[in-house]
Amino acid sequence: MAAERYPHLKVEDPEIYDLIQEQAKFEASTLKMIASESFASYCVLEACGSIFTNKYCEGYPGARYYEGNEYTDRLENLARERGKQLFGAEHINVQPYSGSPANQAVYRAILKNGDRIMGMPVSEGGHLTHGWKVSFSGQDYVQIPYGPDPETGHINMNKVREIALKERPKMIWAGTSAYPHLLNYSEFAEIAKEIDAYLVADIAHINALIIAGVHPDPVPYCDIVSSTSHKMLRGPRAGFLLSKIEDRYQSKYFAESKFNLAQRVDRAVFPGLQGGPHMHIIAGMAAAFKFALTDEFKQYGIQLVKNAKSLAASLQEKGYDLAGGGTDTHLLILDFRKKDFTGKDASKALAKCGIIGNFNMVPGDHRSPFVTSGVRLGTPSLTSMGMKEDDMKEVAGWIDRVCSNISNIDEIAPTIRAEIAEFCKLFKVPGMCD
Ligand code: DSN
Image 1 (cartoon, rainbow, N blue to C red):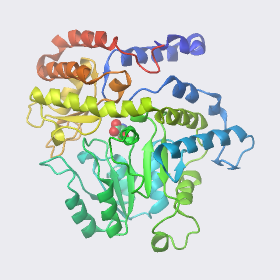
Image 2: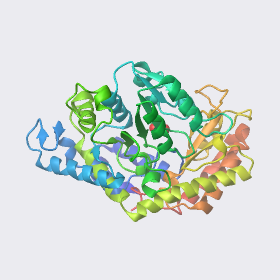
Image 3: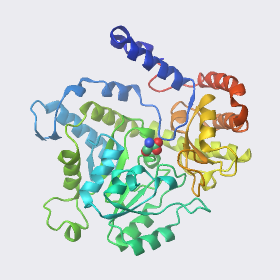
Protein backbone atom coordinates (compact mmCIF):
# COMPACT_ATOMS: atom_id res chain seq x y z
CA MET A 1 0.00 0.00 0.00
CA ALA A 2 1.03 3.59 -0.50
CA ALA A 3 1.78 4.01 3.21
CA GLU A 4 5.36 5.20 2.89
CA ARG A 5 4.79 7.56 0.02
CA TYR A 6 3.66 10.54 2.07
CA PRO A 7 6.33 10.90 4.78
CA HIS A 8 5.79 14.63 5.34
CA LEU A 9 2.01 14.42 5.55
CA LYS A 10 2.35 11.46 7.90
CA VAL A 11 4.23 13.61 10.40
CA GLU A 12 2.96 17.12 9.79
CA ASP A 13 -0.66 16.64 8.71
CA PRO A 14 -1.84 13.22 9.86
CA GLU A 15 -5.52 14.05 9.26
CA ILE A 16 -4.95 14.26 5.51
CA TYR A 17 -2.48 11.37 5.63
CA ASP A 18 -5.05 9.15 7.34
CA LEU A 19 -7.74 10.03 4.81
CA ILE A 20 -5.39 9.10 1.95
CA GLN A 21 -4.66 5.77 3.64
CA GLU A 22 -8.35 5.07 4.24
CA GLN A 23 -9.23 5.91 0.64
CA ALA A 24 -6.40 3.69 -0.63
CA LYS A 25 -7.57 0.78 1.53
CA PHE A 26 -11.14 1.30 0.36
CA GLU A 27 -10.17 1.38 -3.32
CA ALA A 28 -7.88 -1.64 -3.04
CA SER A 29 -10.49 -3.79 -1.32
CA THR A 30 -13.55 -3.01 -3.43
CA LEU A 31 -14.51 -3.41 -7.08
CA LYS A 32 -14.22 0.11 -8.42
CA MET A 33 -16.64 -0.02 -11.35
CA ILE A 34 -17.53 3.60 -11.98
CA ALA A 35 -17.09 3.64 -15.75
CA SER A 36 -15.33 7.02 -15.73
CA GLU A 37 -12.68 6.06 -13.15
CA SER A 38 -9.42 4.14 -13.31
CA PHE A 39 -6.02 4.19 -11.58
CA ALA A 40 -3.22 6.66 -12.34
CA SER A 41 0.35 5.34 -12.32
CA TYR A 42 3.06 6.34 -9.85
CA CYS A 43 4.64 8.43 -12.62
CA VAL A 44 1.43 10.42 -13.08
CA LEU A 45 1.00 10.84 -9.32
CA GLU A 46 4.58 11.98 -8.83
CA ALA A 47 4.41 14.46 -11.71
CA CYS A 48 1.15 15.89 -10.35
CA GLY A 49 2.71 16.23 -6.91
CA SER A 50 5.78 18.00 -8.26
CA ILE A 51 7.12 21.52 -7.76
CA PHE A 52 5.60 22.63 -11.07
CA THR A 53 2.55 23.41 -8.90
CA ASN A 54 4.37 26.59 -7.84
CA LYS A 55 4.85 28.18 -11.24
CA TYR A 56 2.74 30.82 -12.93
CA CYS A 57 2.99 30.88 -16.71
CA GLU A 58 -0.08 32.45 -18.29
CA GLY A 59 0.19 32.23 -22.05
CA TYR A 60 1.69 29.53 -24.21
CA PRO A 61 5.26 28.27 -24.76
CA GLY A 62 7.41 31.10 -26.08
CA ALA A 63 4.74 33.72 -25.28
CA ARG A 64 4.24 33.92 -21.51
CA TYR A 65 3.23 36.82 -19.33
CA TYR A 66 5.71 35.81 -16.58
CA GLU A 67 9.45 35.31 -16.53
CA GLY A 68 11.28 32.14 -15.60
CA ASN A 69 9.46 29.78 -17.91
CA GLU A 70 12.22 27.95 -19.73
CA TYR A 71 11.34 24.61 -18.16
CA THR A 72 7.56 25.06 -18.20
CA ASP A 73 7.83 25.82 -21.93
CA ARG A 74 9.78 22.62 -22.45
CA LEU A 75 7.29 20.69 -20.34
CA GLU A 76 4.21 22.00 -22.15
CA ASN A 77 5.84 21.37 -25.52
CA LEU A 78 6.67 17.81 -24.42
CA ALA A 79 3.04 17.23 -23.44
CA ARG A 80 1.85 18.72 -26.74
CA GLU A 81 4.21 16.61 -28.86
CA ARG A 82 3.29 13.39 -27.06
CA GLY A 83 -0.43 14.20 -27.32
CA LYS A 84 -0.25 15.01 -31.02
CA GLN A 85 1.69 11.80 -31.68
CA LEU A 86 -0.77 9.74 -29.65
CA PHE A 87 -3.84 10.96 -31.52
CA GLY A 88 -2.34 11.98 -34.87
CA ALA A 89 -3.71 15.49 -34.36
CA GLU A 90 -2.71 18.68 -36.16
CA HIS A 91 -3.02 20.79 -33.01
CA ILE A 92 -3.45 20.20 -29.28
CA ASN A 93 -4.15 22.42 -26.30
CA VAL A 94 -3.24 20.78 -22.99
CA GLN A 95 -4.29 23.60 -20.66
CA PRO A 96 -8.03 22.98 -19.97
CA TYR A 97 -8.54 22.38 -16.26
CA SER A 98 -10.90 19.49 -16.97
CA GLY A 99 -13.49 18.16 -19.42
CA SER A 100 -16.21 20.72 -18.76
CA PRO A 101 -13.84 23.72 -19.15
CA ALA A 102 -12.49 22.08 -22.33
CA ASN A 103 -16.02 21.84 -23.69
CA GLN A 104 -16.73 25.42 -22.68
CA ALA A 105 -13.73 26.46 -24.78
CA VAL A 106 -15.16 24.52 -27.73
CA TYR A 107 -18.31 26.64 -27.60
CA ARG A 108 -16.32 29.85 -27.31
CA ALA A 109 -14.07 28.92 -30.24
CA ILE A 110 -16.77 28.20 -32.80
CA LEU A 111 -20.17 29.50 -31.65
CA LYS A 112 -21.99 32.63 -30.58
CA ASN A 113 -24.43 32.72 -27.65
CA GLY A 114 -27.85 31.54 -28.78
CA ASP A 115 -26.51 29.25 -31.53
CA ARG A 116 -28.15 25.88 -32.03
CA ILE A 117 -26.20 22.74 -31.26
CA MET A 118 -27.09 19.07 -31.52
CA GLY A 119 -26.24 16.84 -28.58
CA MET A 120 -27.46 13.93 -26.52
CA PRO A 121 -29.39 14.85 -23.36
CA VAL A 122 -27.98 13.51 -20.08
CA SER A 123 -31.11 11.36 -19.75
CA GLU A 124 -30.16 9.62 -23.02
CA GLY A 125 -26.48 9.07 -22.19
CA GLY A 126 -25.01 12.46 -23.14
CA HIS A 127 -22.96 14.84 -21.01
CA LEU A 128 -24.07 17.94 -19.10
CA THR A 129 -21.97 20.14 -21.38
CA HIS A 130 -23.60 18.85 -24.58
CA GLY A 131 -26.55 21.23 -24.10
CA TRP A 132 -28.28 19.95 -20.95
CA LYS A 133 -30.62 22.58 -19.53
CA VAL A 134 -29.03 23.03 -16.08
CA SER A 135 -25.56 23.60 -17.59
CA PHE A 136 -24.21 26.77 -19.26
CA SER A 137 -24.37 24.76 -22.50
CA GLY A 138 -28.15 24.48 -22.39
CA GLN A 139 -28.62 28.00 -21.05
CA ASP A 140 -26.40 29.96 -23.44
CA TYR A 141 -26.99 27.72 -26.47
CA VAL A 142 -30.04 25.88 -27.83
CA GLN A 143 -29.82 22.10 -27.65
CA ILE A 144 -31.41 20.10 -30.45
CA PRO A 145 -31.58 16.64 -28.85
CA TYR A 146 -30.90 13.25 -30.38
CA GLY A 147 -30.38 9.93 -28.67
CA PRO A 148 -30.49 6.16 -28.81
CA ASP A 149 -33.58 4.54 -30.22
CA PRO A 150 -35.67 3.47 -27.16
CA GLU A 151 -36.31 0.07 -28.76
CA THR A 152 -32.79 -0.87 -29.90
CA GLY A 153 -30.65 1.29 -27.63
CA HIS A 154 -28.51 2.21 -30.66
CA ILE A 155 -28.20 5.69 -32.18
CA ASN A 156 -30.08 5.60 -35.49
CA MET A 157 -28.00 7.69 -37.90
CA ASN A 158 -30.96 8.12 -40.30
CA LYS A 159 -32.83 9.78 -37.48
CA VAL A 160 -29.77 11.95 -36.66
CA ARG A 161 -29.66 13.06 -40.30
CA GLU A 162 -33.39 13.80 -40.34
CA ILE A 163 -33.12 15.99 -37.20
CA ALA A 164 -29.99 17.75 -38.46
CA LEU A 165 -31.49 18.59 -41.86
CA LYS A 166 -34.66 19.91 -40.24
CA GLU A 167 -33.05 21.87 -37.38
CA ARG A 168 -29.75 22.89 -39.02
CA PRO A 169 -27.59 23.28 -35.88
CA LYS A 170 -24.23 25.06 -36.22
CA MET A 171 -22.43 22.32 -34.33
CA ILE A 172 -22.97 18.62 -33.66
CA TRP A 173 -21.58 16.83 -30.61
CA ALA A 174 -20.61 13.22 -31.24
CA GLY A 175 -20.01 12.18 -27.67
CA THR A 176 -21.56 10.27 -24.79
CA SER A 177 -21.02 9.45 -21.16
CA ALA A 178 -23.32 6.46 -20.81
CA TYR A 179 -23.70 4.74 -24.17
CA PRO A 180 -22.39 1.20 -24.66
CA HIS A 181 -21.98 1.20 -28.45
CA LEU A 182 -19.56 2.60 -31.02
CA LEU A 183 -19.99 6.00 -32.65
CA ASN A 184 -19.87 6.27 -36.42
CA TYR A 185 -17.87 9.47 -36.90
CA SER A 186 -17.71 9.19 -40.68
CA GLU A 187 -21.53 9.28 -40.86
CA PHE A 188 -21.67 12.13 -38.37
CA ALA A 189 -19.14 13.96 -40.59
CA GLU A 190 -21.26 13.48 -43.73
CA ILE A 191 -24.32 14.85 -41.93
CA ALA A 192 -22.37 17.83 -40.54
CA LYS A 193 -21.02 18.61 -43.99
CA GLU A 194 -24.51 18.58 -45.53
CA ILE A 195 -25.58 21.44 -43.25
CA ASP A 196 -22.25 23.29 -42.87
CA ALA A 197 -22.07 22.38 -39.17
CA TYR A 198 -18.94 21.91 -37.12
CA LEU A 199 -18.45 18.35 -35.88
CA VAL A 200 -16.99 17.97 -32.40
CA ALA A 201 -16.25 14.63 -30.73
CA ASP A 202 -16.09 14.28 -26.97
CA ILE A 203 -13.90 11.22 -26.37
CA ALA A 204 -13.39 11.64 -22.62
CA HIS A 205 -14.98 8.27 -21.91
CA ILE A 206 -13.49 6.27 -24.77
CA ASN A 207 -10.04 7.69 -25.56
CA ALA A 208 -8.16 4.50 -24.60
CA LEU A 209 -10.43 2.47 -26.88
CA ILE A 210 -9.55 4.78 -29.75
CA ILE A 211 -5.83 4.53 -28.95
CA ALA A 212 -6.15 0.73 -28.85
CA GLY A 213 -7.98 0.67 -32.19
CA VAL A 214 -11.15 -0.94 -30.80
CA HIS A 215 -13.28 2.16 -31.38
CA PRO A 216 -13.42 4.30 -34.55
CA ASP A 217 -11.06 7.27 -34.57
CA PRO A 218 -12.77 10.70 -34.69
CA VAL A 219 -9.64 12.77 -35.39
CA PRO A 220 -9.77 12.54 -39.22
CA TYR A 221 -13.46 13.52 -39.26
CA CYS A 222 -13.88 16.20 -36.62
CA ASP A 223 -13.09 19.89 -36.44
CA ILE A 224 -12.37 19.59 -32.72
CA VAL A 225 -11.99 16.60 -30.40
CA SER A 226 -12.37 17.19 -26.68
CA SER A 227 -11.19 14.88 -23.93
CA THR A 228 -10.25 14.49 -20.32
CA SER A 229 -6.94 12.93 -19.33
CA HIS A 230 -8.23 10.99 -16.31
CA LYS A 231 -10.95 8.34 -16.69
CA MET A 232 -9.66 5.40 -18.76
CA LEU A 233 -6.58 7.37 -19.92
CA ARG A 234 -5.31 7.13 -16.34
CA GLY A 235 -3.75 10.57 -16.22
CA PRO A 236 -4.47 13.60 -14.04
CA ARG A 237 -7.90 15.21 -13.69
CA ALA A 238 -7.62 17.60 -16.63
CA GLY A 239 -8.74 18.18 -20.19
CA PHE A 240 -7.22 18.66 -23.63
CA LEU A 241 -8.45 19.73 -27.04
CA LEU A 242 -7.33 18.37 -30.41
CA SER A 243 -8.20 20.40 -33.47
CA LYS A 244 -7.59 21.03 -37.12
CA ILE A 245 -5.47 24.11 -37.76
CA GLU A 246 -7.62 25.65 -40.51
CA ASP A 247 -11.34 26.34 -40.14
CA ARG A 248 -13.24 24.86 -43.07
CA TYR A 249 -16.03 27.37 -42.39
CA GLN A 250 -13.81 30.41 -41.86
CA SER A 251 -15.34 32.38 -44.73
CA LYS A 252 -18.87 31.43 -43.72
CA TYR A 253 -18.79 32.01 -39.95
CA PHE A 254 -15.54 33.82 -39.10
CA ALA A 255 -14.71 35.90 -42.17
CA GLU A 256 -13.96 38.90 -39.97
CA SER A 257 -11.52 36.97 -37.73
CA LYS A 258 -7.78 36.91 -38.35
CA PHE A 259 -7.46 33.73 -36.30
CA ASN A 260 -7.68 30.20 -37.66
CA LEU A 261 -9.43 27.35 -35.79
CA ALA A 262 -6.39 26.27 -33.75
CA GLN A 263 -5.69 29.85 -32.72
CA ARG A 264 -9.32 30.40 -31.72
CA VAL A 265 -9.28 27.22 -29.62
CA ASP A 266 -6.13 28.44 -27.84
CA ARG A 267 -7.56 31.91 -27.33
CA ALA A 268 -10.82 30.45 -26.00
CA VAL A 269 -8.88 28.51 -23.33
CA PHE A 270 -6.51 31.37 -22.48
CA PRO A 271 -7.25 34.24 -22.05
CA GLY A 272 -10.91 33.49 -22.86
CA LEU A 273 -11.77 31.24 -19.94
CA GLN A 274 -8.74 30.43 -17.83
CA GLY A 275 -5.75 32.05 -16.20
CA GLY A 276 -2.50 30.28 -15.41
CA PRO A 277 -2.22 26.69 -16.61
CA HIS A 278 -1.70 24.01 -13.95
CA MET A 279 1.80 22.96 -14.91
CA HIS A 280 2.04 20.10 -12.40
CA ILE A 281 -1.10 18.64 -13.96
CA ILE A 282 0.31 19.16 -17.47
CA ALA A 283 3.38 17.24 -16.24
CA GLY A 284 1.06 14.41 -15.19
CA MET A 285 -0.70 14.55 -18.55
CA ALA A 286 2.64 14.27 -20.38
CA ALA A 287 3.45 11.20 -18.24
CA ALA A 288 0.05 9.66 -19.03
CA PHE A 289 0.56 10.30 -22.77
CA LYS A 290 3.96 8.55 -22.61
CA PHE A 291 2.35 5.45 -21.07
CA ALA A 292 -0.55 5.61 -23.55
CA LEU A 293 1.96 5.41 -26.41
CA THR A 294 3.12 1.95 -25.25
CA ASP A 295 1.98 -1.44 -26.42
CA GLU A 296 1.07 -2.28 -22.81
CA PHE A 297 -1.49 0.52 -22.86
CA LYS A 298 -2.95 -0.69 -26.16
CA GLN A 299 -3.39 -4.15 -24.66
CA TYR A 300 -5.16 -2.54 -21.70
CA GLY A 301 -7.49 -0.72 -24.15
CA ILE A 302 -8.30 -3.98 -25.92
CA GLN A 303 -8.85 -5.77 -22.60
CA LEU A 304 -11.30 -3.08 -21.42
CA VAL A 305 -13.75 -4.20 -24.09
CA LYS A 306 -13.08 -7.94 -23.68
CA ASN A 307 -13.79 -7.61 -19.97
CA ALA A 308 -16.97 -5.57 -20.49
CA LYS A 309 -18.24 -8.09 -23.04
CA SER A 310 -17.50 -10.99 -20.70
CA LEU A 311 -19.28 -9.25 -17.82
CA ALA A 312 -22.24 -8.40 -20.07
CA ALA A 313 -22.52 -11.99 -21.35
CA SER A 314 -22.39 -13.44 -17.82
CA LEU A 315 -25.07 -11.07 -16.58
CA GLN A 316 -27.29 -11.75 -19.58
CA GLU A 317 -26.92 -15.50 -18.99
CA LYS A 318 -28.21 -14.88 -15.48
CA GLY A 319 -31.27 -13.12 -16.94
CA TYR A 320 -30.31 -9.45 -16.59
CA ASP A 321 -31.45 -6.87 -19.14
CA LEU A 322 -28.77 -4.51 -20.40
CA ALA A 323 -29.54 -1.17 -22.05
CA GLY A 324 -28.76 -1.39 -25.74
CA GLY A 325 -28.68 -5.20 -25.52
CA GLY A 326 -25.05 -5.46 -24.39
CA THR A 327 -21.83 -3.57 -24.97
CA ASP A 328 -19.16 -2.82 -27.57
CA THR A 329 -17.19 -0.61 -25.19
CA HIS A 330 -15.90 -0.58 -21.61
CA LEU A 331 -19.28 -0.01 -19.97
CA LEU A 332 -22.67 -1.55 -19.56
CA ILE A 333 -25.92 -0.33 -18.08
CA LEU A 334 -28.05 -2.75 -16.08
CA ASP A 335 -31.66 -2.06 -17.00
CA PHE A 336 -34.06 -2.49 -14.07
CA ARG A 337 -37.09 -0.88 -15.73
CA LYS A 338 -39.11 -4.09 -15.24
CA LYS A 339 -38.07 -4.53 -11.59
CA ASP A 340 -39.78 -3.19 -8.51
CA PHE A 341 -36.49 -1.73 -7.25
CA THR A 342 -34.78 1.33 -8.75
CA GLY A 343 -31.30 1.95 -10.13
CA LYS A 344 -30.54 3.88 -6.96
CA ASP A 345 -31.66 0.96 -4.74
CA ALA A 346 -29.38 -1.38 -6.70
CA SER A 347 -26.41 0.96 -6.76
CA LYS A 348 -26.63 1.53 -2.97
CA ALA A 349 -26.92 -2.23 -2.36
CA LEU A 350 -23.96 -2.96 -4.64
CA ALA A 351 -21.88 -0.33 -2.84
CA LYS A 352 -22.69 -1.85 0.55
CA CYS A 353 -21.20 -5.07 -0.76
CA GLY A 354 -18.09 -3.43 -2.23
CA ILE A 355 -19.17 -2.97 -5.86
CA ILE A 356 -18.93 0.73 -6.59
CA GLY A 357 -20.92 2.00 -9.59
CA ASN A 358 -23.50 4.71 -10.15
CA PHE A 359 -27.22 4.84 -10.78
CA ASN A 360 -27.99 5.98 -14.29
CA MET A 361 -30.94 6.68 -16.57
CA VAL A 362 -31.62 4.07 -19.26
CA PRO A 363 -33.14 5.04 -22.63
CA GLY A 364 -36.93 5.19 -22.21
CA ASP A 365 -36.63 5.40 -18.40
CA HIS A 366 -39.94 6.01 -16.60
CA ARG A 367 -38.17 6.88 -13.33
CA SER A 368 -36.68 10.28 -12.42
CA PRO A 369 -32.95 11.11 -12.75
CA PHE A 370 -32.76 11.03 -8.94
CA VAL A 371 -33.64 7.34 -8.74
CA THR A 372 -33.40 5.98 -12.32
CA SER A 373 -33.88 2.41 -13.55
CA GLY A 374 -30.24 1.70 -14.35
CA VAL A 375 -26.79 1.13 -12.92
CA ARG A 376 -23.74 2.02 -15.03
CA LEU A 377 -20.72 -0.22 -14.55
CA GLY A 378 -17.35 -0.04 -16.31
CA THR A 379 -14.17 -2.06 -16.53
CA PRO A 380 -11.27 0.49 -16.54
CA SER A 381 -10.26 0.17 -12.89
CA LEU A 382 -10.59 -3.62 -12.75
CA THR A 383 -8.68 -3.97 -16.03
CA SER A 384 -5.93 -1.68 -14.69
CA MET A 385 -5.63 -4.09 -11.73
CA GLY A 386 -5.01 -6.96 -14.18
CA MET A 387 -8.42 -8.64 -14.22
CA LYS A 388 -9.38 -10.68 -17.27
CA GLU A 389 -12.53 -12.23 -18.79
CA ASP A 390 -12.79 -15.09 -16.27
CA ASP A 391 -12.56 -12.65 -13.37
CA MET A 392 -15.56 -10.84 -14.83
CA LYS A 393 -17.57 -14.04 -14.41
CA GLU A 394 -16.82 -13.92 -10.67
CA VAL A 395 -17.81 -10.26 -10.60
CA ALA A 396 -21.09 -11.08 -12.37
CA GLY A 397 -21.78 -13.69 -9.69
CA TRP A 398 -21.48 -11.07 -6.93
CA ILE A 399 -23.62 -8.57 -8.85
CA ASP A 400 -26.28 -11.25 -9.23
CA ARG A 401 -26.21 -12.14 -5.53
CA VAL A 402 -26.66 -8.48 -4.62
CA CYS A 403 -29.39 -7.73 -7.15
CA SER A 404 -31.34 -10.88 -6.16
CA ASN A 405 -31.29 -9.81 -2.51
CA ILE A 406 -31.94 -6.07 -2.52
CA SER A 407 -34.59 -6.34 0.19
CA ASN A 408 -32.36 -8.20 2.66
CA ILE A 409 -29.03 -6.72 1.61
CA ASP A 410 -27.91 -5.85 5.15
CA GLU A 411 -27.88 -9.55 6.05
CA ILE A 412 -25.59 -10.64 3.21
CA ALA A 413 -23.49 -7.51 2.66
CA PRO A 414 -20.72 -8.30 5.19
CA THR A 415 -20.11 -11.74 3.63
CA ILE A 416 -19.96 -10.45 0.06
CA ARG A 417 -17.84 -7.45 1.09
CA ALA A 418 -15.33 -9.83 2.73
CA GLU A 419 -15.24 -12.17 -0.30
CA ILE A 420 -14.58 -9.22 -2.62
CA ALA A 421 -11.82 -7.87 -0.36
CA GLU A 422 -10.10 -11.29 -0.50
CA PHE A 423 -10.50 -11.45 -4.27
CA CYS A 424 -8.97 -7.98 -4.72
CA LYS A 425 -5.81 -9.16 -2.92
CA LEU A 426 -5.04 -11.30 -5.98
CA PHE A 427 -4.42 -8.15 -8.05
CA LYS A 428 -2.10 -5.17 -8.03
CA VAL A 429 -3.57 -1.68 -7.83
CA PRO A 430 -1.53 0.78 -9.94
CA GLY A 431 -0.27 3.71 -7.90
CA MET A 432 -1.01 1.94 -4.63
CA CYS A 433 0.83 -1.40 -4.51
CA ASP A 434 4.59 -1.13 -4.25
N1 DSN B 1 -18.83 12.64 -14.30
C1 DSN B 1 -18.42 11.98 -15.50
C2 DSN B 1 -19.07 10.64 -15.60
O1 DSN B 1 -18.96 9.89 -14.66
O2 DSN B 1 -19.69 10.31 -16.59
C3 DSN B 1 -18.71 12.86 -16.65
O3 DSN B 1 -18.02 12.65 -17.74
